[in-house]
Image 1 (cartoon, rainbow, N blue to C red):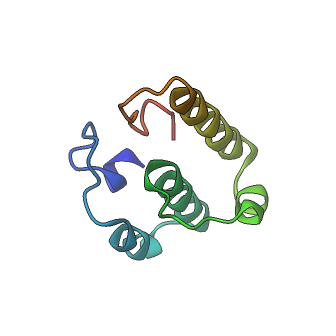
Image 2: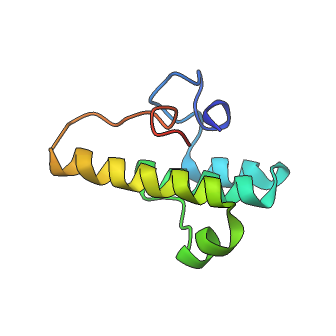
Length: 92
């Protein structure tokens, strides 16, 4: 997933505008498209994923990863840290 979103995968910069990434995700599986949009929502509030999509479209493991990423993001925001973790660090 990080290779799809970032160039290089260790970068903190998206490889394309979020709209382009969502458009490019058509070749991925349905679950991967949901993960792309969830990651973009966490990263830049631009994925427009719906809660029902997460609940119905993700495996238990991937839903757990998204929930963990949300909790991690919230903790970082609460601490007012000025850096954004990479999706690899959030295990997405």
